[in-house]
Amino acid sequence: MVFNRLKQYRKFFNQQVRKILPAIIAAAFVLLQASDQFPRPLRLVQNPGLENFGLENTGIENHGSGADLKNGKTEDTGNSGPSLIKPGDLDRELVQYYINQYCSPGGKEWLRAVMEKAAPYIGFIKEEIAERGLPQELAYLPVIESGYLAGAVSKSGAMGLWQFMKNSIAGYDLKINEWMDERRDFWKSTDAALKKLEENYNYLGDWSLALAAYNAGLGAMTAAIKNSGIRDYWVLSQKHFLKTETIHYVPKLLAAAHILSNPRQYGIIIWNPQIEWTRIATDRSVDLNILAKEAQIDAAELKKANQELTYSITPPDKNYLLKIRVQDAEKAAAVLARKDLPLVKYYIHTIRSGDTLLALALSYGITVDQITALNPGIEPRLLRIGTTLMIPAVNDQPPPAVSKPGENIAFTGTHLVIKGESLWSIALSYGIDPEALAEANGMELNGILREGRMLKTPIRE
Image 1 (cartoon, rainbow, N blue to C red):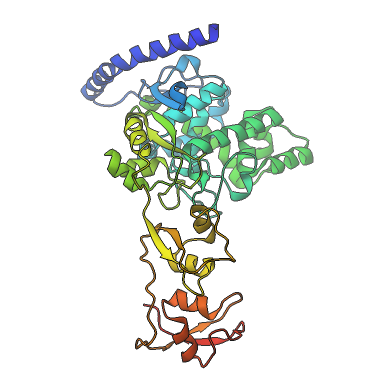
Image 2 (image 1 turned 90 degrees about the vertical axis):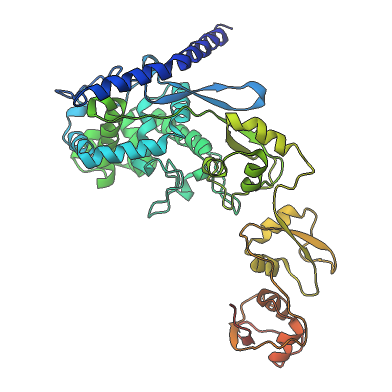
């Protein structure tokens, strides 16, 4: 009861702050513009205080209406939890090196641009961190991981704000399939990353080691500690028991986090607009372009919030939750409630003799699983001629045209037969009549087609 009462007081306080915050910020900009230059520190501050001038936002969770709600608010530096930066850390050589790098004209411009990209996400991330009682500087880990780009992909294949590899998502409720890659989901990947960091800390007992394990892997860090007998990240780095990337990883984060926690000291103005997020169930596949048009909301913003979707179409999964700005949620929910309104473009395909799901999938540029998901009860081996299938129009690829027997088609191309193909499936993939294909190659329509045979076919345009 006491905890709930405190949350109510906190919510009331934040609402009052939000009312007066614009006036405070406007006055601040007037004062800053009246100065010839921004104030600079004479020395590095090891215990930063109220330096960010309230120009960044965190979030408050509201569980009303059965939705997960994130509501932007001014950063609460009085409840920031533990710090990653220990006394003396800012004086370390590599940390100083990266502070100098980030404080160069180009470095500051890069940080400003990255924080502009962070605007849609950082309020949500800071509130998630605060709720777990974790160091607030973790909010700046995506700065060095992905440049705060939800769609970022590294050379090694790591993806998303928090740069998860495919082999590192087990146990974190991140799905990868033909519909989506949830490593790009800012909501779910943040939850996964913070769980992973907290697990590392609970196992290693030190935040510098936990961060190094996030970069190198918990197994690699455990091996380095075991082989060296050292449990101090800085000593492990000094004695080169860690790879070069990991040696630079923590100093780089501490430098960026220190500067971005004190942006005004370094002449960096950060303005993150307040963004409130919620999630709503779709109950069916929904094309974000159609939803945005019907609800009269910004399609680009809706897609940006749901970058995990491969085709900007939600999967046919009733458990999928669409992320949307709170001010747009009611309009979107009203559209979703209209069961008479088609929210995905489909092709209707009538099964013909020789059709297979594999051939159809190849022809329409989708997967067999996508066809079966939208046609429940279909038996791939028992397709009935004349029945219809719904084929999602995910690629704006027009349906294949099938030529009629007797049309004048030039068989001037070639096709190498692979395992599992038939004259029927090959004809469908080329949009020609199977009998015409058989005749052009001197075969019976139901004759044996051996793997590796070269067939005459039309040339695909």
